[in-house]
Image (cartoon, rainbow, N blue to C red; front, side, top):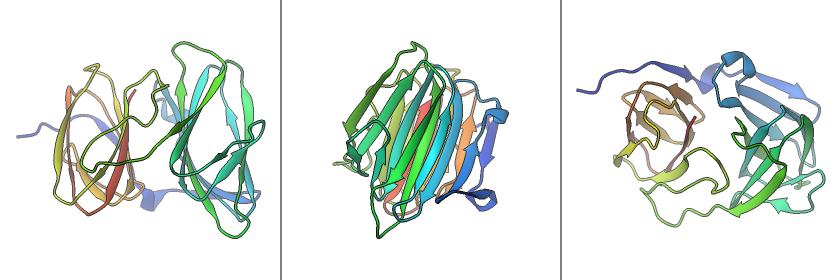
Length: 215
């Protein structure tokens, strides 16, 4: 029998979306949630050729995933697509302007802000292509925290042993439905779990996509 552990669930159905300039923004997790090394999680949908400004804290690491569309960031010429992940480490508090590179379609992005354990100023663009289903792969090799993404077929189960037992797990369903440590999570639902050594999850739909971090 799976023992229920302390958790916080953030249901997408109850998310609050706010209009900010040429985008709509949902703060899935904010500083007020007091989530330790995980500072904030934000989703933003940018209008055609629109932009969004993100204020990062000092000693932060930003992980930016393009869920659909394409983006371009200030100071960087590289255009980021869904097949790539952009990681930005900054010692100082800063403002990052993110622009929708498309002028005929919206773009959806996910920004995960983490506390840097070894602060530095650097950025990285890595390929993010899922070639094999039902397998976890790193979101980014540049992070100081274990991090994974996986695309699953329906009814596939997996058990994950934490690298650092006792750490919290942040999980977010990008698409589909999962039973995540005996809790139902659907598209854009997320969860914070604590007090576990192993994580058990099962995909409940085809092409179910999930990410999670040890924080």
